[in-house]
Length: 345
Ligand code: NCD
Ligand code: ZN
Image (cartoon, rainbow, N blue to C red; front, side, top):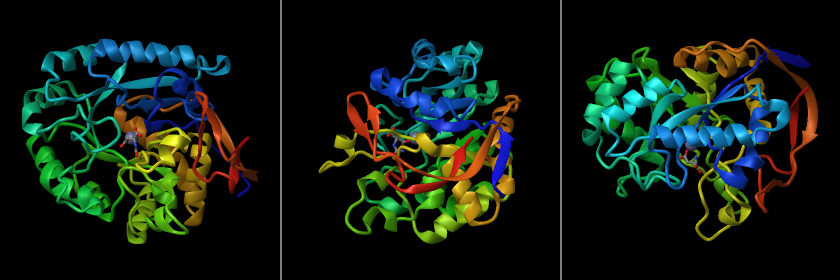
């Protein structure tokens, strides 16, 4: 296969940041994807509909001229202990908010305002279930006694399974899954529950963080896992099962914040997102299933129309730059300085 034409894909989990950083990273996504679910973990977080509408306007204003009509940001609200059912109603009525994001407090970058105890959110979750507004979940416990590599599995047992049982009609996206346990949970759960998978978790296992010295640009949350987990993710993503779909979790941080004694979590993949997924699918001879994963399953789950136009990928080696410009700083992309074998035509 030397070219691959697929329906234009969507990114169902993306960090766009704000201000100059937003201007720097948005063009990378807008040139590939028709839509993206935009994460609300700004500082301060996007907790109200008004804040989400204002953020949406800043994103639209930052779009390059040639993408003004071809890219649509899909907005989310950041769930806190204090998010009210009335705010959920306003979110539903707005027509531009597609999900409510649960960050367990302290789980990841800018999650200090996250939920401390899900029982505080029950009335709000009831409202989401009733109004059919999906819950997007960062699925890791924050208990410091739990091994970092086990935090997703423990989250399933302690939080996610009971949540799904209590709110059986609530649509839930288990974001950026990283383990075989998560794949099994999704396989066994109802049609209301789906998962996104990143390109970096399909391409790398945890050796990539530590081999040849500490590799800060491979550090993200949830952290990369063992090879058996990567294999399970690859199998799920390429299986054709509509419960798995593309979400890059592209999460840019300045080089100085990554190459730091206390480096930030997040891998930037927007520069080559669909090409990186194509490389992963090609590893297991499953390129024919890329379109459904990248362009159909997410739209179907979110009950949005599938995109009408297409993109073409060519089998062509290209060298990923060592860094991109990022608001006066450098941004080191995944696979910096190496060859990627697919390129958007
Ligand atoms: C994300 C970020 O930087 O905003 N980081 C990451 O490692 N994925 C936050 C997140 O999605 O957990
Ligand atoms: Zn994320």
